[in-house]
Amino acid sequence: MKICLLLLAFVVAVAIGQEPQSLGLSFAGDDIERLVKQLQAGLAPKTEFETTAEYGARRNLLKKDGTTIVVVPDVAIPASSFTYDADSQVMTYNIFFKEARPPQRTAIPVIRIRRSHRQYEGSNAYGAKAIISSSIYDQFNVAPVTAVPHSVLIPLPIAVAKDTKSFLRVALECSVAGGPIETDVEGFKPTVSDPVEIYINHFSLPVSVRKFVVFDNRTGNVLYTWSPDSSSDSLDQKKITQAVFPLELQISGSGMVDVSVDDGPPTMKFASATSPASSVRAKHKIYLKITSSQSGLTFVVNGHRLIPAWSYTNFHQIGSMAFFERADFTITDTMLSFPTQGSLHKIGESIQDWTSLLQLDLKAICKENKPACKNLQNIEHKGNGTFWTTDNIGRATQWVFAGGKITAIKTQ
Image (cartoon, rainbow, N blue to C red; front, side):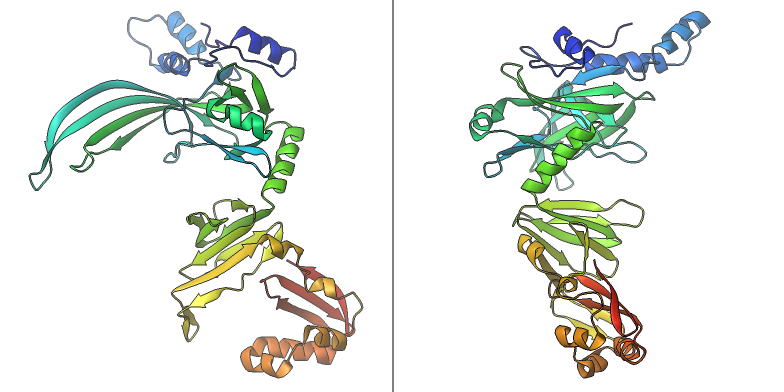
């Protein structure tokens, strides 16, 4: 039974290793609903009226691993979106993911079909009544089994972007990964103030996303293609990303922090020891705010460890416990051009010159930080040891001494 219904022009172009210049008029991709139903039918258990040969033939339909399908997410449902930046002349395709409860995967919505609709009178516990509009939908998604970025950057001249933005669509070329269809039910209960009831039956097809094809829905003309499996495509995306968003912050460890990008709204970021680092990119500025202990969080800006010089509000300390209402720190692109402490010094520099250039006040250090005081005194006396300092933007530098001179400088 044939389950791949690609348009001939696209199949020929892919088969000969070329990028298609056009997907044709009214390109809609493959019928994901039909494919999902075929796979579900193959998964059904053997019935008493089915021969073993018939059951085996039906099960063979499931052996479609690697089958190529092309889907075009519908813009009528909560969908991915396009945003344009005229300064860089780059269109960003922001990919929308449906969150899923483990062990299910996050998924990209493709199409939502309303199966039923009715209206009825409902009331709450206080007797207030409203006419409820109730709908049931089936939604078909693709669930990537390999990593997919949350955005794709598309270089487009201003004139082209202005003309095409409202008509841009993305075709996802995928390989069926095999395994069962992942199902889930999502519901939204009505209230008197919002008398809408929605239930969505989700069907997610496990796939490997091989290619993003950005095209003009009016003509089918292809404007950009990008493949996660292509090293050259990934390098191009990295270069575009670094040019448009020169600030990259990675948050790891354990804890939570509010993050605002380029004066945008704050977003809560969570970090845990079992999850990969969260990545945030910005053009000019990243604002951080915490309302609890920051000791479990690790920040890395453009590959360098950052120890923020927090500005505390209502800070007080009881014993070893620190309490505060909030702490703020802003990372800006101008920090990238600031010299590090290490760049002002050189290997072989004496301890005396080092303390003089850094303007270290041993008496003040001994008054505020006993362990640091003792460590510094030992280094001055023995000529050997390791010492850490932090500059005015929170960057930490490790100084290694031997024989009364600097032997290594490492800035994080």
